[in-house]
Image (cartoon, rainbow, N blue to C red; front, top):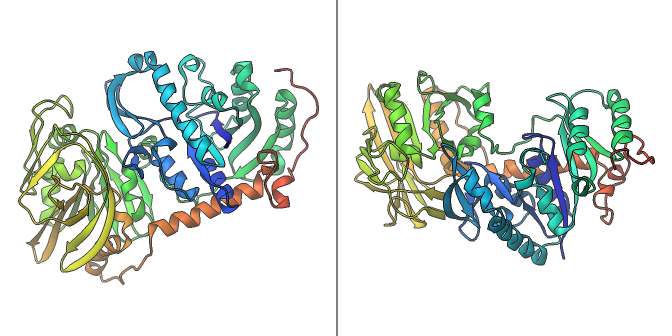
Length: 519
């Protein structure tokens, strides 16, 4: 039987995902078979599992931290927003139905049954399961129908730790308010607090730590310092709504990414962060970079309509005429073609629409969703690279262009052994490149990533980069996260039977012995 621990939060984006990954790595480093788990996630960033099902990118990355193969049971319910309060509901990795909130809520017991199936699978196959809650674990207007937090933990009889983000302010009232508002049976599951993202001298927190313990009877297990050197893909689109510039701010190579209205799998450009400056541009902005990426999107036809309405289609053509490099991924690839044919309005309310016409191809919607782990041989300018990726797309593409990838395993454009397209144009004494692919994760193939970045660097008279794999960067980050947690959290109170360093067992402040007035 597995031991279950849940990390819940006072809010969204308080660090639950990162802490779960760190705890998974700590356990995996000690030889345990460990699985991450989130019963219900809402995200347009997803990956493909060993069963060729779809789960949220956070649980996929957490499984890498846990040194285990990603499984559909790590995230049994995935909600992918489509707009107008409707989401595509993914159950055990496969599309189930489009639902609004009210219909979803009415089917709560069905989804809890699917969650229970996954928990039973994990209980049989793993030593530890580190669970992640969703948002705040105490949204009192939603508690009756919440199937993503402590109700799920209650099903398996585990313990919980509550994480608060001190960087946004108000961490103590957030912790106190969350515990106060929880039903008593769930309040008893909270065995400790973790304060995350602290800047400065922890000594200034001493009185606050003592007082929150006195008020709640729950110990503070640790204070985790704010760190900016962790590499971990974001799953919340709020992050890219709040920021316009990402990556290496000193890089001479600028990549523009169009901030689509329903952008999906924006983690595709994370592997570029180290070597390029990423600038997110809106439909009305100018293209200022060396490379332009049209990313994935939940609705290709809508994005094409918006590109045309704001004049971005014209700016893209002018960019190519200046010798630009344009790369379309998944929905962005579809948009590069002549037509997007959606007779049955499967993509949304736009229906069929003319594309940018940069590649001689059409995409037809209406097929079953493609969910594949894929690999093949990519050819560009006489270079050949072995590449892998994952496919998550509706629509098949009929292309008359030279394919970018010969597919060895996967679906590609239409299941006939080729993926994507490439066109190279001579303009004004230099080459312009138009590339498209259905392979999400294409830049995780570091040799291809380096090739694209070096096209720009050579133009600027700069030395080529020779950076290594993105997976190696993630591995380094997992170890950093684990080390920071070990050094700052009293893990002995979470995992009393583990062989832990002494620093993990010595909290820096006293724990109260007095009972809580909340109990």
